[in-house]
Image (tube, rainbow, N blue to C red; front, side, top):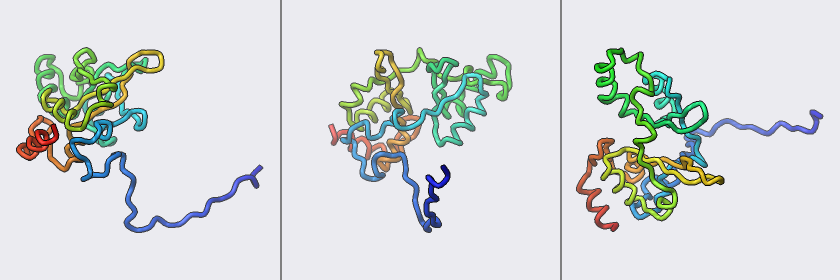
Length: 199
């Protein structure tokens, strides 16, 4: 049986070899008129980064750092989405307010204490996203003052399932603009002129 397998030839890694990036659009080539799906993290193609609601907020933050993301989907034991938690939630005023109200220390805080629960998450429909442009997503996120948006669609049984995630930070990076998590754009006049020009 061993003779049915063969050793593959190997070589050393050439100097300066890059790594494929997950971005489907080459940086610098993205335009606001591109299809919105070009900037969506498609969970059919990329593994979702999830967390239990019982993890401490610092453990959740460490998971974000390790995965290179700023949003985690919070899942229950049945793999249903309970909510989301962002780096902004963890590093912002939510923990301070919760600690003051509940008289607990930061290391006692769980994801469930500061996450945005499912019933407060506004989502986009995949059917709308498929017809949208990048500029539509930027406008949607800026008008809502949000850094992220979840996209849902119906699965084969007609039940809703989270299909994708938009990140204003990633979109800004791909556009070559510095769009801050607060919704403020470093080059506001430039983005405004681009948004107006693309409509």
